[in-house]
Structures are given as structure tokens and as C-alpha cells.
Figure 1 (cartoon, rainbow, N blue to C red):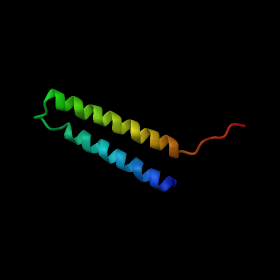
Figure 2 (cartoon, helix red, strand yellow):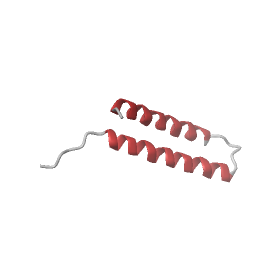
Figure 3 (cartoon, rainbow, N blue to C red):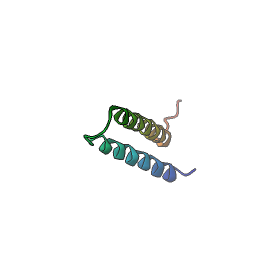
Length: 62
């Protein structure tokens, strides 16, 4: 897959993480809903970090 497409996936994962974070500002969330959103944020973060790490140039050992 091309790096550009993977970077698009990275950006979408960050957008989803941001969306979930914004949902946390809702004062009417139950503790269970809050926990769900926090877990979704963590998962989106892991996904975006994996994509970012994969797309970064790797230093070659000498």
C-alpha cells in the first residue's frame, strides 16, 4: 500500500479519536458510556500510533 494512503488512514484515526474526545464533554454521560468512550479513544490512539510508526522512515543500522 502506498504511504499516502496509510497517512490518510492515520489522519482518519486521529479524527475519530478527536470525535470521541469531544463526546466526553457531554455532561449527561453515564459512567458506563464514559468508560466506553475512553476505551474507544485509547484504541483509536493505538491505531494512529501504529500507522505513524509504520510510515516514519526507518533508520538503517550500519
